[in-house]
Image 1 (spheres, rainbow, N blue to C red):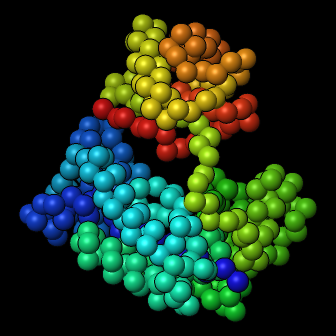
Image 2 (spheres, one colour; image 1 turned 135 degrees about the horizontal axis):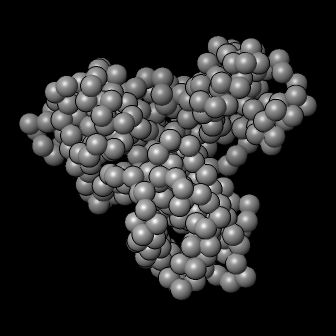
Length: 353
């Protein structure tokens, strides 16, 4: 049986800022740009006591915590600290799958130190991280990625939680649907309408019905409800897309403003494609209107898209397939992917402000 650890740094960006500026310790703060339409990237634990959370509009966060401190992000610094942490991971195993700058999966079934109990190894990793970076991490330990990921949330901050194989089904039975990895608000709302609130209720739904309602995701949910997740920890994950998007301080309400913004995003996208050496044929356009509804449009070319001359005409073509002349735009984004099956992934570069 596999031994999987999920490491999740505690309030990573905020903790790095507090570490490097002692006067910020104990202060409720968020890391993001201080603009009216900014979204909280990370909230310190002091801020979370006021109900401030990641992905919350900054304006709402300030209402919940009037004395909230806004700290500008330093992404290069976070990247350097993340690389330091990943070097620690590789002392124990080469099977490390980064999920983001602040979290990763480790397959320690056959680890370099021959440590038998995964929980003991997780403790050593956490100790190394704290000793060398002065930052804390939480760890989830189990026999697959799903349960390790969920477990890492149970003793935050600076904790360890293990889901043992013989206790997994009972653990899942009591697990709220929103705690399942991959279930967002919309899927959860659909499940609630079906009378599904916990893993135990999900387990009672047939595979056929889940697939009818949720498509391919239905079979995944069927397995998850039974503690089954056979996905390997992938030390190298092939990049599927490169993209960037921008949320505007002032909505774009004229054609000229939209075209200028689109041009700027194309230039940024070309630079990112060049740096990543990514090769893709499909261009996707994402628009979020001022009503907060959004659309995507895609087109697949007969060649690799990598230059401004490749991308700009297609981006304009996609734009003209929308109602942009009659509506007001709050967010605009472009991505290049390998094939036509690509769907827009949240988490592309979001350079607000």
